[in-house]
Length: 283
Image 1 (cartoon, rainbow, N blue to C red):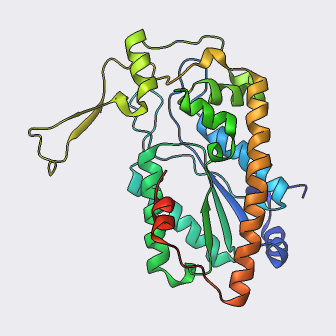
Image 2 (cartoon, rainbow, N blue to C red; image 1 turned 180 degrees about the horizontal axis):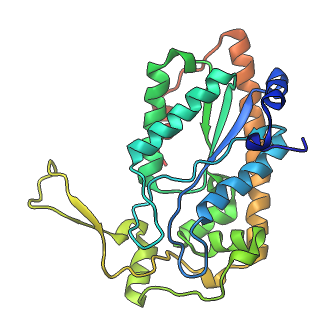
């Protein structure tokens, strides 16, 4: 396919596409700080660029990305949308795509925030539960890092936000937007963020009762918010991660689409075990 971008198609183009193909990729990201060296739209680039690459491999199209969700960070440039608002928006977009005739919807998260992803998974499960029109719609959430051994190993070595993996990917895809100035928080704070990516949050309450909802804010000591080692990044690592993702994700998605199409045709469903249900709802 020459053009995989839904947003660049006409009504006629889409009508012709839906005659033979009912699969679409739906990327989303967030606007948030990524240190002094990466742009605020880094997570959006993660989803859009890889979404298009995957779409070309699958021979399908990619929907315009949703560029806002929940970050939790409070530094300048970060735009937070409450997880329930974000999840409702994704759900309504999926309902609209289903009404148009799409049957396989592959969500590509560019942002790995646990609050957004956990809320979205459960929200979509309930949405399918309550909307019979979605029974024959396969919705897949496919985090890119699940399909790259290099990226997964960097997580294990305490490399997360705006660090080696993300910086390497942007250096590979769009090096012109990467700045030379790399700044980290004070050593103690930087190490705290590497050891626990959620440690930027300060939670307080009036009691220690588990029933009380705590107040959450960003720690004043967090000035930059990088969680890892961006100085180790390079374009070659970004290229390697990109190739690993494509090699890993494309056959999995092709098989899932073929299986879903076969199940719809034969009126079949696979009942999940308790362990499989727990796996679906975990990160």
